[in-house]
Length: 261
Image 1 (cartoon, rainbow, N blue to C red):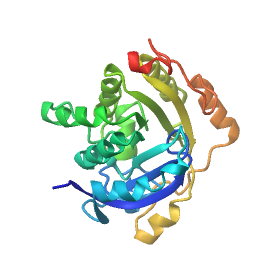
Image 2: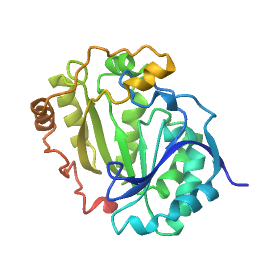
Image 3: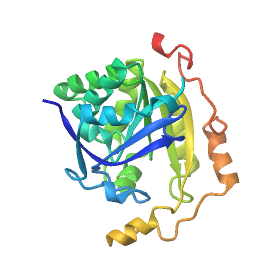
Image 4: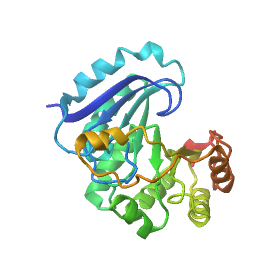
């Protein structure tokens, strides 16, 4: 019997969720409580539309003509790793048809427990690209921002690097919260220590999801936060050693040789 998953929503023509044109599936459920979350309606688990992996792939694959040679399927959230087995089955169907697969994750559910790793290894086999959101390098700041430690998140990045899996690293830039120079320098050093990061992106904070907090009756903790200026974004990118959207070379491998790591 097919594994079932809980879906929040779909985007059939996504342009910022991985390479090329993509069909993006947003799963329901997340345990983190990021202060700037723009999708708080995805927090609740075990709700939303229930789909089998087969039915979901049939729906998504109808759009294959739009993807071209660079696009494919992205699974995001919520937190997609909360439904690890469902994503693995869905991606296995995609890879059987030669579709490029991307997982957008904050890595919060990741664990070095051997039983979990056995399941995660199966996911890695059918995932072409991991887009990893690193919110803070300092563990205490990460706890204050999200309610959770970042130790397992950084461990997942290292695990992906050790197993030759391509990654994009993303960081949301909030003025006076996630833009301090030391934090950005620590992030840059960590990224340089990894072998398979092909892209680093600064995501400027925005308030487009504020109305969702209000509609849900949840107090928004960043009422006084502002959108970063273009100069502030460029400063962060300079500290990370990138220009916006630039492919980066890290540690021992470049983006053309990732599969040889």
